[in-house]
Image (cartoon, rainbow, N blue to C red):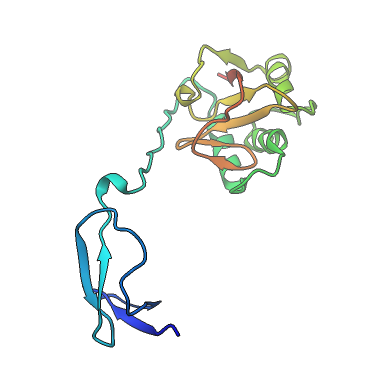
Length: 184
């Protein structure tokens, strides 16, 4: 039968946890360990995790705001960020269209159905220009990134810390980039 006892940590924190009176069953990452006593006085040895074994967090690549760009596109990035979900709803072009319209970057709702058709429509009907950018991380805040590939493709807006459409992402889409579009 397992015995459940509260454990007091060395740092003064208190939390209730399941603990066995026996040694831990997991292998330590390092040979350094912290020894603590549970409420019953039994010693528990807990391994420390080395810095090299800790999860590496990648810092977002901060995008720059281009002062020559239409400020409505920066507003569109903010609007899209506020309306985005944590995970995709498969409605990227719809959410980008609504953000562009709400910010005043376009004067009417774009008519194309597929995300990969956004590039041609933005250039022909709304005065966008294709930028000489092939790296999504180099795109300025508010620029519209259009991707092709199988199916409908993907479209997203660059914001300060990542990319946003119907969802937020720190990394750009893995699809083939058709182009980065902006309006002056």
